[in-house]
Image (tube, rainbow, N blue to C red; front, side, top):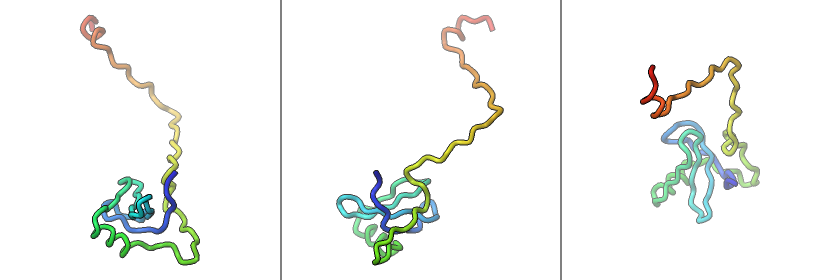
Length: 98
């Protein structure tokens, strides 16, 4: 299970809002849907995170998630799918008369 969201930050790599979380050692990291987990470990990186994160208010109300991070998006089924082409095995390729 993912750690709780404690704020939002703009992703410097992929753009858009990302969810900020805190790991078990107390370091901040954020999760971007396209880039995955981004965790600046150095002091300057943690300072950047603290400066640029929109943290949850003092009343403790959780922020709504930016996107469903832990759930996969439903896949749309295509009605007219063609059958996949079977590849020939090496032996069939070598010994066939085609």
